[in-house]
Length: 149
Image (cartoon, rainbow, N blue to C red):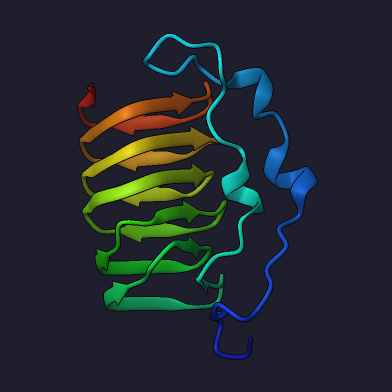
């Protein structure tokens, strides 16, 4: 872990009490009207790669299933998988074609186009959002348009 990135064979276990604090009481109803809350198992999944808090990357990044950003990334993301931006994470990129995106207190700058978007714990997005399902708590902010299909 000295280079700041865990690969698929490493294990990552988030501090679950910090990561889950306040989520269930502030979740909005998914767009389809069902009372089911968004998937919470994304936080329990083991990421393919992690950009740790001390790592700042610019460039092009391709991954298969799940990327977690606790540091910063600026550039092009290539994946059909999922993404977590942690509490101190910062992403400057267009998010296109991802399955599930969770911004857990971090910040994303650029447009977001995904199936499911979850914003919580003071997450910030600077850009337009297009998704099929959106959940956000009252502490989050979005500067841009929101389209839920």
